[in-house]
Length: 409
Image (cartoon, rainbow, N blue to C red):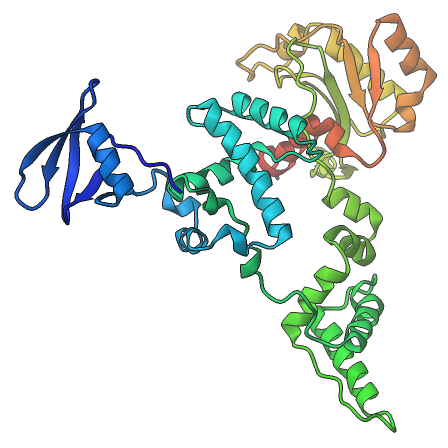
């Protein structure tokens, strides 16, 4: 039964008249006001409790104090009309497990289900009941909302297994086998046939089986929507991506994305990379095309400031890396003074603690490694084909090519 309390705003019927509680004194005196003629009565709480027990009075439960969008009230009301004796053994087991956690949380008198205290109660109940897979905080919170919305009636925690739909496949096993073969031979291939083409192939395969001599029964034809659903049942999204586009594309698409290193000191982590700019440089005097310049850029991850660069037409090499490293370490006053149009200063310089580079051959040169050892610089190589390991400098290249160089003749 739901918990019934005589408190302020509680509604109750007495002698076929509806009253609301105006106040309850510490001594147990209850002030009631009638809805019909606004008459105010005064009664002892114990007397009202005896009348409720005798059936002379009854409480009208208040509406749930949770947002109704978070619970299904029709489902809860249906469960409140169900007797616990009608539950199957499996449903009874699910209910008793839920009730063990909710009862413990109710006894702990948690305020708004604080996360840490709730998880502590869940851990204690799981230990006492040898529950190897205790529910999460979100699951327990959902159970508690359902319990409160049901007027704190334990029956609100009954499982909804009886509302489930079909548990067997509608189509015969022979059609399912044909569909699986057709999906693997047509859709899950590097040719990347469309779902519609796969559906047409399935219809042809079933029609071929139906036209075989001596066949007594005809196989049913599934719908196009069923084929798309069956594709998702046959293979998970990763396998679909891998079979249609290759394992590398699947790994890239479904990789786990975590927050990268977040340094807190300048020059703690400097990322270095090369890019060929979207520019074609032409000689001013003769008009001949020189080529596209290669920009080697170094950016400090903590401050997001460019700390060094090298711009030229030579391919990435050990010499280019050493020149960029020299530009990182020394002050930039002389460089800035060459260009009077620059108004701001370039104050970033110093020896970096760690430089993050790719796996190019020039970065494994003995001269580069020797220079880093002498300067006590830790060189960290990113894995092959993983630009996300140098996400800061890669993002900067995108900004340069799409925003800075846009419109340059």
